[in-house]
Image (tube, rainbow, N blue to C red):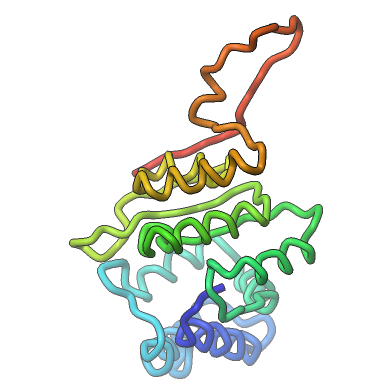
Length: 214
């Protein structure tokens, strides 16, 4: 999902290119022939996507091709459903949640949360929470380098937990905590240290979460 028409169009072009690739084609031919994928990136995709400050496409795909078979990648690309929509559109995320109810969901909002303003951060966090994902992968967006410098891997995707772990503004953290309080959801920043008034033997409290920053 991406609000950019350029990104949406790029995915459609990628899918068409992969679908036209001959069966049993080797990675080397797929990438390096005269009308191969690397040439396609330069001639077509560069109008819609950029490779700023990172690894160049030939080097990237040289490593990528060692990790996955071309047949597997073709199946993944063919199964992509590109949606041109805002990550803060709750109605869209509620529809997605109903479609995939009962299935494990992984979300990758990339640097969207770090990039948008406070009110939009709150909406995006609520949309992620709506999906009840088993994993959320986020990054920051360095204001000087214009690229991510930190990454976060969440298995606890509650808005209040993510806002705290990512060091978002006090306004955002307060807003998501207030929303959680209205919904009757305990604050994860205090729940782990609170002491029950009547502790019960043979029971334990555990918050499943994992965050990392690099």
